Structures are given as structure tokens and as C-alpha cells.
Length: 471
Image 1 (cartoon, rainbow, N blue to C red):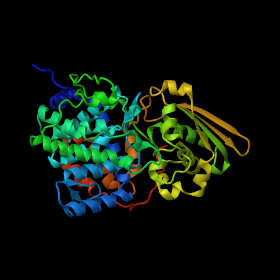
Image 2: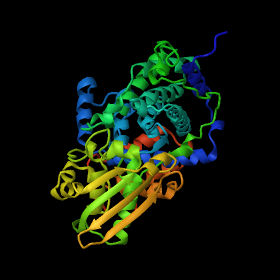
Image 3: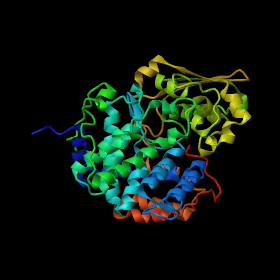
Image 4: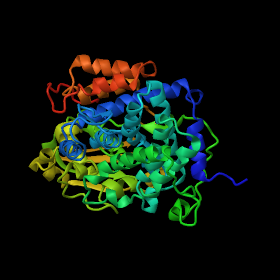
């Protein structure tokens, strides 16, 4: 009898997943991450791309058609809901992350797709969490053993596999059908790391959404008997050749506990910027530094952070103009923190990015790679911030890690605070409390109940902003 291929083993892993494989602690953390994803999605609603997506949905299908809800109101097909809701979760760059030596991934990139699949089949909250856990596990396990980004590819590749498997789980598909769904979704989703290079485009944030759109559609096709290349990994021209390495993962291990290794964000920035901003704000506040006091700033960071966001191999960071450029730019992020004392969605608005004070200050920020910090990455995310003030003061702070990291995880209470910060302009206190209550009791609720709440959220800011971000 032939040994099952890797993609068949992934299908068996997803097909065999059951409630017993999720520990009570893992369930608790999923509630935290789910609430976080919902808050990220709500904060993105005014973004111009989402109005444009709604226009396209109307053009292609007609307004009001489909089995799935859009956060902020409206209905469409499952694949378009996957694109839209996934794009919302990613847009303000506050979503969760999973770190590995060769790169990273964002497990909550699965969220919008699994949410659409769950609503389409009228799933329970319990079934939704299980499918989401399957997706988190598959995406992160592949990320752990393959340095995808270091080899020139984008982590949307493993997202295609995980989103297809999670969707197939909700669709009640067999292990064989899930394997074909994974193969179909992944073989045509070879994504390149250049999506992160300067000038960073809008597509960086929407690539995961289009991946999810394809994945849920692939799962629907596989359910109807479509077959995919089962030697996706080990075939003569498969992923193992593309990555130039064997991809050895124990898919017989049924545990669904990778959620414990996810990290969370407090600031609208790539994950590498979280310790930088925490250190910058701590130094600013402790010494009562104002933006106009600053002569220059030096930021020492590990090589990967320098390459992606400091002006290294991914391109110059001297002239950010757009949201997509700003949240991948340590020079701008440091300047925004010093000027505004917060780095939230408002700091990613083009008007703020292009403002004279922000552009002038970021020009006085230098980012450098530190060999010692680089050797400790990703086990430790280190930085050193040095601020030279016009009055002669030289202020320095070395900093390791951040609140939300593995050593200092974000608590449920802090996740609730973050949710209220992100959503307060789009939902009144009563609606926000109802959403938090649903998430806290999701295993006894239905996805239909959640989406009935999410369509009540306003797409434009209707309520005053009072929260200054989680400090």
C-alpha cells in the first residue's frame, strides 16, 4: 500500500480533529484572539478599499445576494465575504502573529475565511473554533519548519493550505476531500516576498484575503469531486523542490495548541516594530520628551527588522506616503510615537503620514542592524532607542520583547480594552458589550448570532473617540 502523501496527511489531520484535541487553556486563548480579530476588522471599516470592494461585489453579483454577511452590513457569497472580512482583519496591522526563524505568519489571516465558511453552513461557535484551530495549526506548523520568507516567498502560500483545510472541516468534507481542497488552493497560490518590498502596495494587505477567497472556493469544488495534485509537496516539481528542502511535519500529532505561541500587537505596526514603539514611548514619557525637542533618534534592531522596516534589503524608508508604507516603516513609526504619543489607526491616515512634522522628524531617525540582537532573533526581539534632544540630553533605552509577546502575553482583560479602543467609534457601548459577551461564551452560541451583531456595526465613525490606545 502506498504511503499517503503530505497533503493527504494534512487532510487526515484536519478530518480527524475533534473537540478533545483543544485544551481548556487553548479555548481560552482562542476567545482572546477572536475578539482581537473582530476589533481589528471593525477599526478598518472606513478604509477606502472596502467601499471599492462593495462596489465590485454589487457589480458582479447584485446587491444583497448571498449566504454570508459583511462586517458592517450587507450580504454576498462566501468567497467574497472571505476576501472582504479577511481584508478588514489585516488592514490596520494590529492582528496576531506567529514567529519562526525563517519568517512569520499571521494566523488570524484565516479568520475571515473560516468565519465565512461557518456562516455559510450555519455552524455553531464550537464548530467555528475547532475549524479555526485546525487552520491556525496547519499554517503555523508549516511556517515553523520552512523559512518561507527567507527563501523569497510570501506566507500566503501556507495560508492557502490552512484556510482550505479549515473551510473543508466546516463543510463536513472527508479527509480525502480536504486533501484535494488543500492541493487545489495551494498549487496556484505561490506568493512572493516582493509583495513586502518598497514601494509597499495595497496588495500586501489584501493578498491574504484573495488567498482566502480562493481557498474557500477550492474547498467547495473539492466537496463536489474536483481533484487536485496530491503530490503538491513531494512531487517532481512540488513545494519541496521550490523551497529546496524536505518538509517534515508530524501530522499524526493531533494537538491543537499552537495558539499558545501566537503574539499580539498594541501598536499599528509590523510585529518587529512592537518592542521599538514600546521602548520609544516609555523613554518619551519617562523624560517628558516632545516631538519638537528631538534632534535625532537612533534605533538599533535585529537584522530582519532592519531589512523589512528599517531601510535594508526591502528598500528605502525615507519617504513614506501611504498607509501600506507607513506601517512597515520604523522611521515613520518612531516619529509618530514621539509626536502623537500613540500609534493607532489615526497614525496610518495619509494626511498624518504626509504631514510636515512627521516627514521632518522621520528624516532624523536612523535605523541600524545590531549583530548581537540578530543572533538572538526570533527567540528575543531586542532593540535600543537613543534620543538626542536639542537641549543636550541623550536618552537611551535597551528593551527586549513587548506586552503581547510570548514572555508577557496579552491578557483577556487587555484584549477587551483593545477591542473597545478599536471599535468605540463604530458601535455604541451596548453593542460592543454584546459582542464581547458572545465571544466569552462562543461555544454555547451560533455564528449566526455573531454575524447579526457584526452587521449592526457602523461603517463610518459615528461615535466620539475617547480611548487613547492601550498603554
